[in-house]
Length: 270
Image (tube, rainbow, N blue to C red; front, top):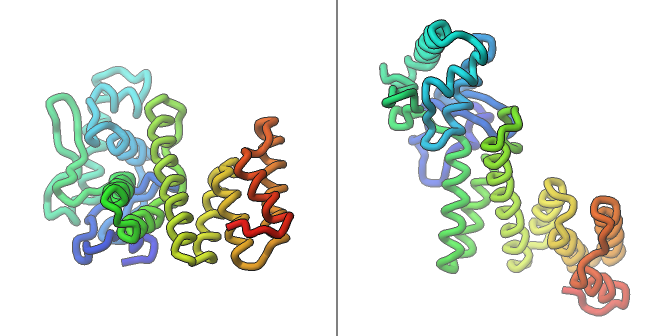
């Protein structure tokens, strides 16, 4: 398996990796048995797989697919083109599925054949973050951290399919919120465990994704303070203040001000 696909394995699933993996996070890619495969058909297979993977239950009606793939084309010709595209997809990946189709017919459209070995990175990401949340509710912070870390290996960027439709925007923001939540938990977990260097790395990743997160700025300040880098901790406050002023014409929260005051006075800040 190539390094590009090896990150999609979840703990305990050795030997049970997906035969076909559709990647929507960061950059659209399709892997067949761990190898990235080229896509032709003028990008239509990408549009088809993205549409199916993003719809509820990974399915869509023929009418919706036709309108997405060939807007304005008459229904008869568009339906023929869709049939050709579906057959082309089967030729592309069918050899890895032991003759099973990558798509199955529904009453009024198509659905990804997940039972045949098709998988989507967003589904795996959701599984990891849901597992992390369940473990948190039972008090298993270490187990939650492991699940969230696996989820972060899947999240190589925001949802990539283009367009500004409401459904896509909502899904992109939902996944992004889960990503930010996982980073925040891992920052807190490693800080509380005394692993300040790892906590600092996660806090910086959180700020790279959302520079206006004051909790992440405070985490960076605390980590630097624990590491004996008091000046760097205070510089982080100034950065936080400037970002908030520039983006929102707002001042830092009282908790951020109090932390800075403690650092400036030399009082314990953590």
